[in-house]
Structure formats: C-alpha cells, structure tokens
View 1 (spheres, rainbow, N blue to C red):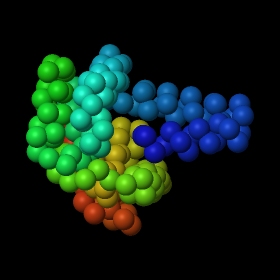
View 2 (view 1 turned 180 degrees about the vertical axis):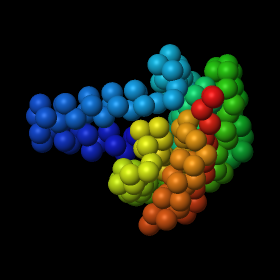
View 3 (view 1 turned 90 degrees about the horizontal axis):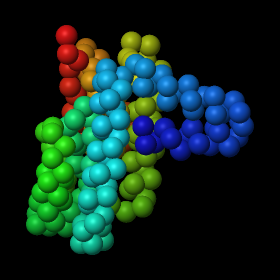
Length: 189
C-alpha cells in the first residue's frame, strides 16, 4: 500500500478531480473488501502511528536503525535493520510495552540500515508485485498489503489459503524479489 500511495498522488496531481475520485474509490474498495472490521482497521492504523511514535522517541533507534512496525489484524510485523541485537531488542521491547494485544513478528535483520537506493528499489519491487497482483483476475489484491524491505517481500492480510498461495506465487516470480515472507491470517468462518 505504501508504494501505491505515491502513484495515486501523482495521478491526483495529473488528473485533477478524476484522480481524487480514483484515490477515494481505491481506498473505499480496500476498506469495503477488507476482512477486518472497520474498528480493527482503525485500531491497526492507530497502532501504526503508536509504533512509529514510540520508536522515534528513542534517539538511538531513530538515528542508528531503519525499523518499521506494521499492524495488521491486531498483530505487528517489525521489519528493517539494526546494527546490533541490542538495538533490535530495544525496538521490540518498545513495541511490546505498547500492549497492542497481538503477536509481534520480528523480522528485523542485524546489519547496517539500507541506503536510499535500496529503499527506492524496494518501492519499485512493491509496485511491480502489486501491479502483477492487480492483473491476476483470480486474486483479490484489496485484501493484501505488500511491503518490501531490502529485496524481501512481506505479504500481510486476512485471506484464504488459496489467495495466500496465489499471492506468494506472484511475489516469488517477480524480478528483484530475493525472498517472500507471508504473515497472513485466515478469515474467521
């Protein structure tokens, strides 16, 4: 979704009112088709802001790492890089103290933060994956969040096993993707 927003913003600038209608339609379709309740969607958005704020409150995390937390269905995916396990653990502990209620998936890698070039390439990979997903008539892309970090594609959402498998196959077969990590939940029946 992060990569889709810049594209939609450009469309808005280029197309005026038509772009605004498209942005509203895509956002509305994503919310309407999301398996999560509206309340859960709001909770996840609020959790994203809480995580970013809590991590930014620590100067060492803010200045020495590239760590992001993304909430989905009450769970949190932690991604990025930290130069030491001490800083990685501090980031995880910071998020745990928020008591967001769900599981924390720690996918923070030990190493130097990625460069601007790598992050730009990650945005391009996310765009390619989302575009390929949009072109697959059997996949409901509105239920899947795609995030790329250092060539690793993380897939989040509340989807059926068939939809998850299809999304993984598309991502895995996209140029530039080094690894696919799925963090899917199945809908409640």
